[in-house]
Structures are given as C-alpha cells and as structure tokens.
Image 1 (cartoon, rainbow over the protein chains, first blue to last red):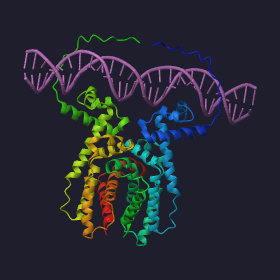
Image 2 (cartoon, protein in one colour):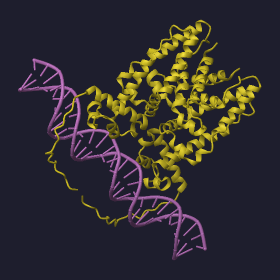
Image 3 (cartoon, protein in one colour):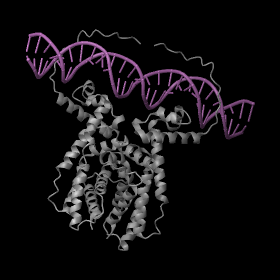
Length: 220
Length: 220
DNA sequence: GATAAATTGTACCAGATGGTTCATTTGGTC
DNA sequence: GACCAAATGAACCATCTGGTACAATTTATC
C-alpha cells in the first residue's frame, strides 16, 4: 500500500477568494435542509451536502461542528419559521368561529405548502425528538399557539358558539393531526388507496373537510 | 499490505447444530423489526440486527438477499398484520353510529398499542413508500377497510343518522389522522407542549376526543 | 503595513458497514 | 448409507463516510 509521504505540493495554486461567512452559512443550511429532508439524519451524506453547497465540506465542520450540529441548526431554523408564522396570525379581531376556521385553514395550508417542515418533524420524531430536546433555542418558546387557541375558544364559549369543556391543546392537536397526516402519509396513502392527497383537485376538498371537522368538534 | 493467504484453519471446530429455517427466519425478522423501528432503514445496522439474532449475519443474506429485502419483509409482515386486524372487525351487526364509533375506537387503540407499526409507516413515508410500491404482496390488497366504512356510512345515511355527501376515504383519513398523529408525533408533542400523549392518564381523554370528533363529523 | 483572528482550501484517514467467499454440516430421499 | 440440496459457520473485504491535519489566505484593527 504505497504510502504517499506528505506529498510535495509544490504547485499549490495560490487562489483567491472573498470571505462571506453569512453567505456560506446560508448556502450550507440550504443544502443541508434539502439533503436531510430527503434522506433523514442517518441517510444524509455530508459529502453530498458539501457537493450541493457553494463551498466545501471543511466549512460545514467549521461552522456547525459535526453532522448532528448541522441537523440541529436546520431543525431550529424550521421551528423558528413556523413560530414566526404562528405569531404572525392576527385573529383577535374576528368573531370566534371565523377565527377558528381561519386558523384551521392557515394551519392546513402551512403544512400543505411546507412538506419539508412536515418531513423534518417526522424525522425528528423517529429520533424521539432528541435534538429538539437538546436545542436551547427551541426549549423556551412555541407555546403561543396554544394561548391563541385558548383565547379564541374562550370567546366562543362565552358567546355560546362553542361547547364548553374542551382543552386548548386538544383543539390544537386535532387541527394539527388533520393538517399533518395528509402530508406526512401522502406516499403511503397514494400507494394503498391510489389517491394523491397533494393533487390540486383533491387537496381543497380535504382542506374543507378538515376545517369542517374542527368546527363541528367545537360547536355547541 | 501483508496478504493473509487463505489461512490454515487447521483447528476448525467441528461444531454441530440443528436446522430450523422457520425459526431462523422468525428470529431475524423479529430482530430486524426492532432495529428498523428504532433507527430507520439507513440508520439500522445489519451487524446489529445479526447480533440481536439467534443466528448470524450470513443467514440474513441467505434468507433476505440484502438489507432492503429484509426491510421489505418487515414492512410486509406489519401490513399483513393490520390487514388481518381490519378484516377481523365485525361491525355489520351494529347500528351505524355504534359501528362507526367502535371502528374509530378500535383504530385508535390499534395505533396506540402498536407504535412499532406507526413508526414503520413513518419511516416508509420518509422513503416515499418506495418499498410499499415494489412489494408484490401489498399491492393488491388493503382496500377492505374503505368498503367497511362505506357500508356503515351508507346505512347511517339511510337511517338519517349521518349527513350525506361524505367520501368513505375522507372518513377513513380522519379516523387515521386522529389515531396516528398522537403516536407518530408523541416525542415532539411532549417536547414542545410538555404533555405525553401516551401517558395512561391522558390517552383515554384523547381517545374519546378522537371518537367524538369523528362522530360529530358524520352526524346529520 | 504589521499583526492577529477569522475564514477557507486540499489532501487525507481510521473506522464503520454492507456484502461476500469458501467450506462445512444437516436432513431428506432412494 | 450414498447422494444432494438446503442450511449454516467463520473469516474476510472493498468501499463508503464522518471527521481531521495542516497550511494558506483574507480582513479588521491599530
């Protein structure tokens, strides 16, 4: 096994580049998201991510430490994003039933429009949410959506529109489940039942069903 | 690189064993299920499966060809199992509303009691159900549950209990979503909201909510 | 323009991993 | 009990893969 003893490197090209830390970070994160979303944590290949990147593998380790650090960064960014989305909802001015229907619709759409997010959550659940647990960024946040729901629900009960005795978390889980499942299980549903829930002629109907189901769950 | 030229093996132990093809298959499948369920397809290690097995890695390749073949076998067995479960349901004698509530309850329980199945379906969806697609065993079957639902629903509509105009698939997807989500996303739900949906003091409530939600979706 | 810290390039590697080679044993059949 | 296909054992290997060593270049600061 002919040992190449520290090669000469005489002809090292003196090449030039401009620094761009933020750009490099972005480029890596984008490539990583694509790769992780497609292949999962263990299925993703660092070399593959590096290849998709504008820079090199070296930079991945420089900025993110290791594969899991990169994965965590991708997860954190995605949770940041949906948190901003949830915060951006402004439903306080609407009557409770309209507010809730709108929230359900928005949530459904967010999932349908962001299958990457859904897949990432699936992958993270396969790993027992181990990386969510160790992420300091995510720990303290993300309960706001429950507060939003609780407030709307309370108003609805007060106005006699909603029946009392339902937990806000239960409402959220129902909305999420109905929004998540079509996307997360799209492939197996298509395989088993022959229907593509993401198809433009089917999605709207499923959307309406989801909203109706939530509203019927709540109505007095 | 010192080539070890076919070592002597003089002292090869003449050891004895009894043949047990079915037992070996079973042992491998069981070990594989545990490993795949925990780590996914790419995360699972063949050596690890072999170690959990009563036999050797050699046998895995002998019986299942390669890692994916083994994975496919595990998937097929799990789908077989739920299919048998669905076939075993006998709801024809019950009034439509009771039948549907019972179906929803059974489905919820099956998911809650078989997180392995849920995880496997998640994993398969991460892989775009590629292995379901290439499995000849699964292709032709598994529509029966839709027929069961359609029949119950029709009776319900005829008796004026259910509102008309709902697709059987939509009913199934709603039941599935509400049964699947708590299990599939249990880890992230606990992480984000601090509630363990699998805990014995929470599960029954969620179960009832799921059933109620389905019934309210259907009622005229 | 000297200096140090931040950033990037190139080549490389040790260990893990899926899969195989070759030989042997077992059990049914005639 | 000879024969053969099915079943099993033990060691081995080529390749992939996450991660690093080492050094160079750039940029901010003074």
